[in-house]
Length: 211
Image (cartoon, rainbow, N blue to C red; front, side, top):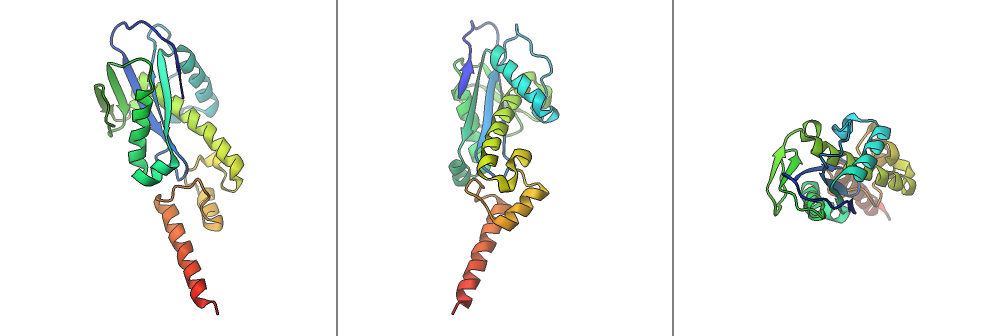
């Protein structure tokens, strides 16, 4: 999904990129690309993890209203399972940059992994906490994914995705052990894979014991 506004190109267009959801055990990964407007300042930008959910929502709305351009993209659960979560994350970031209406002069990416892009780019470790345009992308991606987690919570309330966002909290892990994985769990994620293997082994043992 993409929103933004056209603007005359003046100076260097820097695009921030960040992802969210790599460490989660469920669903798709999200990435956002954002080009801020230097004439429309947004106060309070920082790493999305350092903000309350309420503050993130307010800032996400301001970013969407004031940015020159932005794009929020995903890589699906099927792609996570096929390419592993890091490969899927690269896809989501590529799609976020490709979805911009404006072509950036430089892409600044949080972390130390760089997707293949057709524009100059560099990575910045902890960039979401130190570079405003990356912070903006971080907030956009985080809010979009959190909203999706609420939808998954409504479909699968036993796992409390509204609170844990798919990360393996003590409650989530206990629910996994009790109920097994649901359709949106990442089958190649180690704890989920181990639980599936244990379940298959148990079913096999019961089958062998059956008269």
